[in-house]
Image 1 (tube, rainbow, N blue to C red):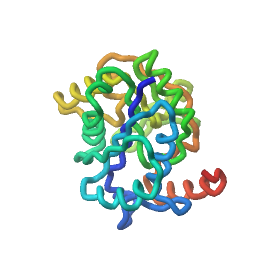
Image 2 (tube, helix red, strand yellow; image 1 turned 45 degrees about the vertical axis):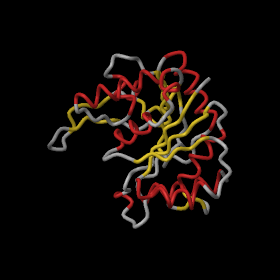
Image 3 (cartoon, rainbow, N blue to C red; image 1 turned 90 degrees about the horizontal axis):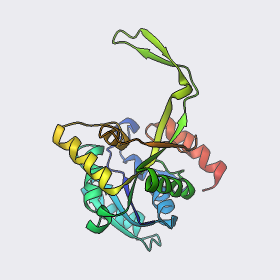
Image 4 (cartoon, helix red, strand yellow; image 1 turned 90 degrees about the vertical axis):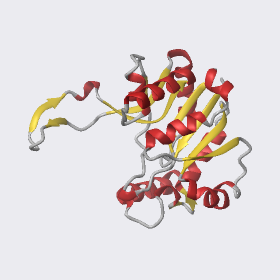
Amino acid sequence: MNAAAVIVAAGKGNRMRGDIRKQYLLLGGRPILWYSLKTFESCREINHISLCIPEQDFDFCRSNILTHLDFPKKIILVPGGAHRQESVYNGIMAIDCDMRKNGIIVIHDGVRPFIKAGDITECIKWAASDGACILGIPATDTLKSVNSRGCVTKTLSRNRVWMAQTPQAFQCDLIKRAHEKARQKGFTGTDDAQLVELTGQAVKVIRGSGNNIKITTRQDLVLARALHSISGI
């Protein structure tokens, strides 16, 4: 299957409250972003990677991540946008035109370092047959709908509620059209699957892993370092 990846790591990391962007913080002696890149590089279905980072970080990324690693696959540095959705669109448009017409695009948060190549492959397989596929995990806590005053309005059934993760894989023409439609309407979604949902396309959800965490806060980093010490990735 012909597939390309868009790895998004253009965030400022404000919630981390540090001088270094979260994607470059060290995990086991290597930048967090390194792990996502390494896994996607090892996935045989992926033949192109668009890495979306702040443009001012290009030299840093080349010197501290890319040049010290043996990445035979094509990795293109793409300037990030004002927000994540714009960064993803930039990454999609940096992919070869032929790939955008025929193939699968896999979108992943660069600060989810514990993703497994097998999960990427499964997402690609389902996207090829169903059009769109994302990773997710079932909700385990009791879920409450709360109003603007902070009061519970309803207890939600968690039986049908899943928490979305990345990667999220889509047929190329589908995700491109979904992004362009959102841009035309000035709509910003919370993930790429939401943009596809708004086109009327069904999105397949397959089970991910609780270890596939997104490192956003300092508490996340503490957990990630504990997971790394156990898993030894």
